[in-house]
Image 1 (cartoon, rainbow, N blue to C red):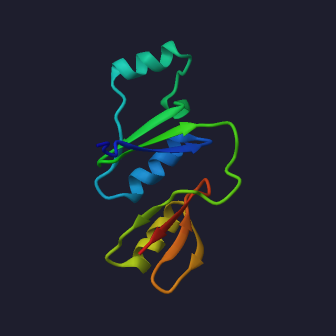
Image 2: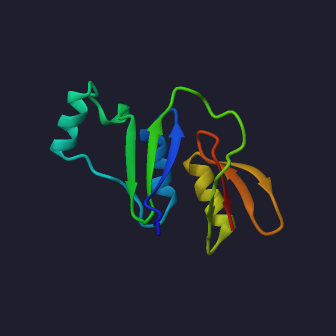
Length: 123
């Protein structure tokens, strides 16, 4: 039987989107860059972690991977995250301050989009 390991998000700028989601989710953080990882990046022509084409956010399971793709998001997500909040209004304000936008308000939840337009819901 398979177990969920990672959720992978295609995006234009992995480092900034990883920081958004690390700040969004309780207990999650961008994985630190040790010297071995920095050396691996340099060997692949990446001198600055800000330009890393794959950025890991740890804290779960699941882990979240953000990977660079050349194209922009075009249509609605086929998969999205649902977030629980003790105080949804305060959480929506906090997420908006981090760069999210409100897409739609429903009776029991709010549809939001992260800084690259990926939809998620806050309950």
